[in-house]
Length: 496
Image 1: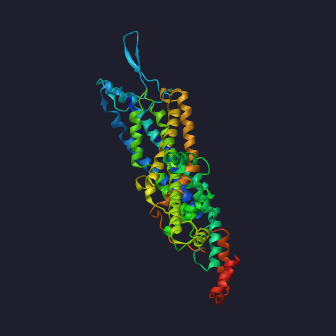
Image 2: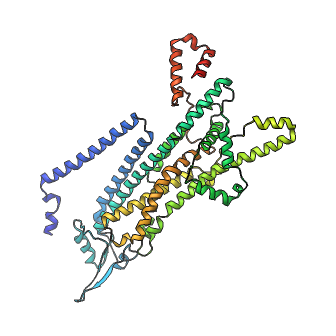
Image 3: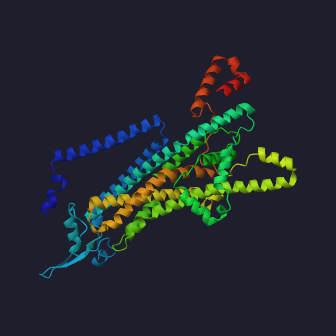
């Protein structure tokens, strides 16, 4: 009784309370101001992806703060709830050892905790239930460890998502050179033809059809899926793939703007999707609850569940590759039908001329290529994969620092190494293959993901193209009478 009174806040020196409170408030304010300044810095540098990640990080911190508040306020009430002893030893993550002493006393020993951390009043609250011949529903120490586990899980998820999205965005930025070369070629053709049919049709589109859609065996579902499965490991998106999907997207959504900056659109939609992926939705928290329920000693749930994100990731990657293959196969089938009809309607000379000059049709985006005709389902699966992988790694480090490497809940070394290897494979594969695939393939849906007005070359970022247009604008301002002359403008475009 005396210990309880002397350890309370009213018997703590005021200078200790004030000092600790000042330090906690100071640290919190420094973190809040640092995040605010970081947000302004990212906005100034036009880093939309990282700024979206920062906003989600603030939301997750607010949610964690609310969870922490609930656990802190109700920890005394929860720890004083008593249950029968036989329920307290049912479905344990680690089996308790039943020890009988020579003097006849019996008790259970808990082998999980190598670090004997104890919270205030634990013995008092446990004794409250023991006097009744029962066990506490959730002891204070277990409640504190659950508190830390939830915090570690959310923080690891945010860090992993930021890492994957940053690496994936860096991978997608490598396609910018393709976009610049395409737009430069379109402008060159547009200057020669006077703006009539400025879409570029070159050998890359034929290469796309030959690589993705040609071949008898590709029509077999099993062969096509096997090729798609292994394709995601090397050159998941080639230049011909990018050009074909870019042409199909623009033909459907911006038919009058062949120079539309498709690469910028892909980056913008990825930033929008990032806001959802980095969050922790309700069904992800439900998954955590189900895992905590099934993490029973002897079931090895933690080990078998570690392969789930890898299996789902390979399946999603194969599906995205298979969608590209189906896009090409549809174009090949349409071209074959068109050529067959042409052979029946025109002479041999006209047919040869038709084959020599008419380009194959572009790919046709459609929701029918996706599971359940829903491109958004792919994003939900990637969201779950990233959270599941973060959960595996976060759970490992939480066990390591809470119970130690040799605890029973850690399992054997043969179970630990495969889990860590699988987690690393998921991180790398998702960053450099699956995420870039998702970013471009989901543009092949029936509806546009992010509707934005078409930006002319003066407004969009096009590298050397943009420089030449700025120069043309300055010349037009210096010579208004020449700027009104369309013939002069055409000459400037051709020279640039």
